Image 1 (cartoon, rainbow, N blue to C red):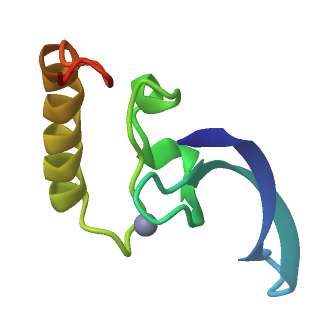
Image 2 (cartoon, rainbow, N blue to C red):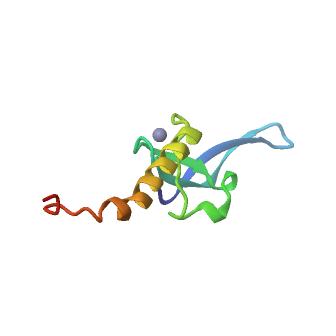
Image 3 (cartoon, rainbow, N blue to C red):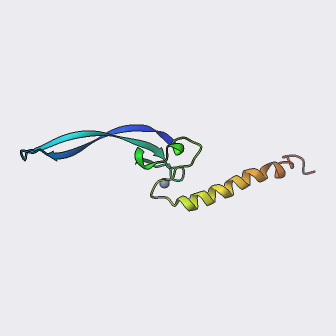
Length: 96
Ligand SMILES: [Zn+2]
C-alpha cells in the first residue's frame, strides 16, 4: 500500500573550472510503500512511478516478491469473496 513520500539528500560532486571539487546536496523525493504481499516497507524514486499509482487503488509489491504471482493470488481471493454471498445463503443453524 501507499504510505507517503519522504525526501532524501544525495550528494553530488562537481568540478569547477579551476579544478576544485565542490560537493553539493540535492533533495530527491522518494515514495514509501508497504508491500501488499510481505508487508515490507520499501522506497521508490518518485520519478520512476506513474503518478496515477500513488494511492491505494493499486497494490504495491516490493522487488523481493513476485508481483505476477501476487496478482494471481489476489484474483483467487477476489473470486472467493465474490462467491461468498452464494454460499452464505446457508447460514449457521439452518442445517436441520
Ligand atoms: Zn514483498
